[in-house]
Image (tube, rainbow, N blue to C red; front, side):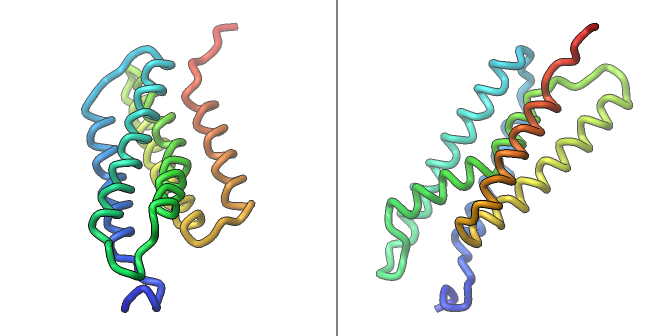
Amino acid sequence: MLRGYGLYLLDDAAWSGGLLLFLAVCLSETRRPLRAATAANLLLLATLSLVLMTACLLMDLGPWSAGPLDRLLHAVKFFVAFSPLAIALSRAGGGHASARLWRWAALFAFAALGTMLSAALRAGDSAQAWLACVLAVAAAVAWSAPPRNT
């Protein structure tokens, strides 16, 4: 009944819970090599996306519910929206207090950006939302890259 008004309570709860679970797992582990950390975070995000997709599919078995392909598309959108955050989480924190403060500020900004991107992707498949995701991934890669010594 609420779907007619645009309310998808199960999907909203799954996306919010998935983001919190992803943040809890990634912030509890420290990984040093940048490539390995990025790969591990992206693999964890992909796995969590598929688990959320499967859980939503099993809990929402009504005649009005989305099918497996729609749920798979939702999992891809979840992965794409929060992949900049996964990439940004792989950057190691600095030793100074100001470096740690900047890292937390950037992580908060990438989490907020992921939330905005997920809302844009869930609203529809516009080219602007996908372009914003590509730009956010590029920004996360640039931010988490190690500084070059020149």
